[in-house]
Length: 202
Image (cartoon, rainbow, N blue to C red; front, side, top):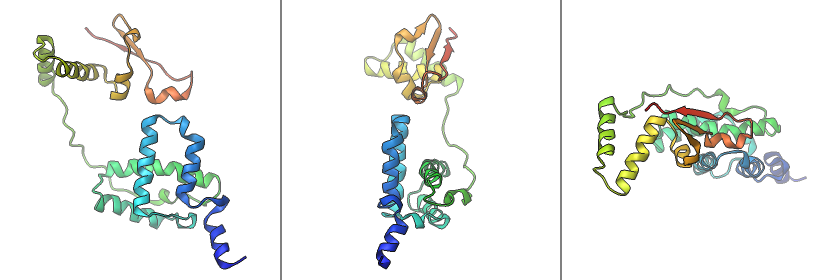
């Protein structure tokens, strides 16, 4: 065995070209268990990691690499701490699987300590603003698409449904003043998934 052959075998167990090739293989086996939105998020996170370092061999999966990746996300991409946490959480799925299959000894992200999350700047409607929107809806000032958008927005306000779940709701799920639904993300979990009941307070 030549030196080049040795390093090739050492860096790429089971003939995986690199860590990204391993991730693609894992996705082919397990992606059907994830919601479509989660699949897109995983692909996006791995895409960002690939932009940071185009090829990552298994022996390069060390804490220092991901410390530099965090700095890249924070300083070059301008990501918030919340986004950085979500990105690492998704990549963690593949790192933990690599540990489980004994391609690496430990998850390198486990040793990283991130900054505390910053306070959110998200703006919430107050009661007066919500009442104004309800009045506008009842008076039917808008027409066509604008009225439909307002109706959908108010439905999400009063039901607290995620937008993906709200889009999936059908009229046959409403029985009197009760809406019965299952979280879209949880449908893949099988028949034992919790079903939620929402009581309309009219």
